Image (cartoon, rainbow, N blue to C red; front, top):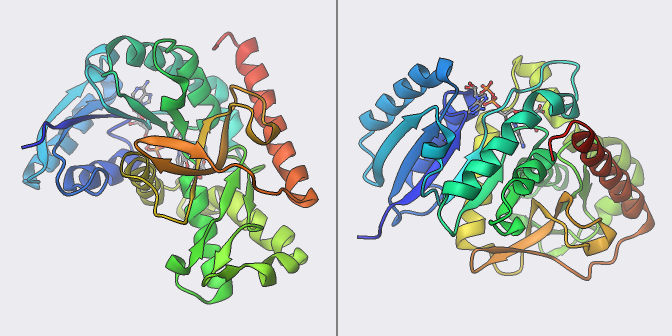
Length: 328
Ligand SMILES: NC(=O)C1=CN([C@@H]2O[C@H](COP(=O)(O)OP(=O)(O)OC[C@H]3O[C@@H](n4cnc5c(N)ncnc54)[C@H](O)[C@@H]3O)[C@@H](O)[C@H]2O)C=CC1
Ligand SMILES: O=C([O-])CC(=O)C(=O)O
């Protein structure tokens, strides 16, 4: 039998944690042949609630679940971890932007990056979900000098999935017939969901990109502001869809993206498309052999260039802010 993969989930007692853990344990994230050992990290006040979730996980009798540890100590929770899902952070409320969380949440990710550096397995892969996700990933990576920067990623898969659904609804096709969308930039209201390379039912999405009014006044803002719309409707930020996106992200990172398609992820820029090196920026990406690869060589039209640049400028401003706060 394959050795279990150690999966650490921070913020395990939170709402995303509750939607995420059962699916990881069922095999949705790493496949039906890979046992997992869950390592749950919480703050001391929430350990008891996380233990309750662990009891429920036990009660599911998942055949792939090789064990569960609950801890409030990062060194132990990241010890030997292969996949780290950094979810634990405060969510925003109505009227807030995700960047408003920088000061409150940024302080979590330095120590966790350090603990990953010192204790995780050599092949550790990190997905930051806690907001502002891109800059929190940058902070974590900066504290883990011994871990290749490419192992730190931020979640924009929820934005990608939202864009897929919006296009499928508009075009009247099943979601599976929409391919090659891209989310560029920050997981924030400045993100740019790009349809200029997309395919709908096997053909270029020309009818959609030609409709500039729909594209710029409906599609882009609907995707970019969907998180706020969910908060407005639900009274709490998205949870099950965020957990689903985290599952998709890690699944594709470890097991690969389908031939001929790509997805979106926040990865450390190596200067692709003029994005300054070191920023954690969402790009169109493929995955093979357990590594993300930015899709290179796409032609970027003027409308897209302006929107990408605006989101990248926000990422640079966030990097400056965390430098000034002494977080990197
Ligand atoms: N990147 C994305 O697409 C998305 C990101 N998010 C973000 O995910 C984060 C979590 O959201 P929810 O689960 O809804 O929040 P929540 O408030 O329900 O749960 C957060 C949990 O994190 C724990 N926590 C806080 N500090 C911690 C620390 N230092 N170590 C370990 N655990 C810690 C809390 O005790 C709490 O149980 C928020 O920052 C939210 O904005 C949410 C949706 C989508
Ligand atoms: O909007 C929020 O604060 C939560 C989040 O990141 C999302 O739903 O995309």
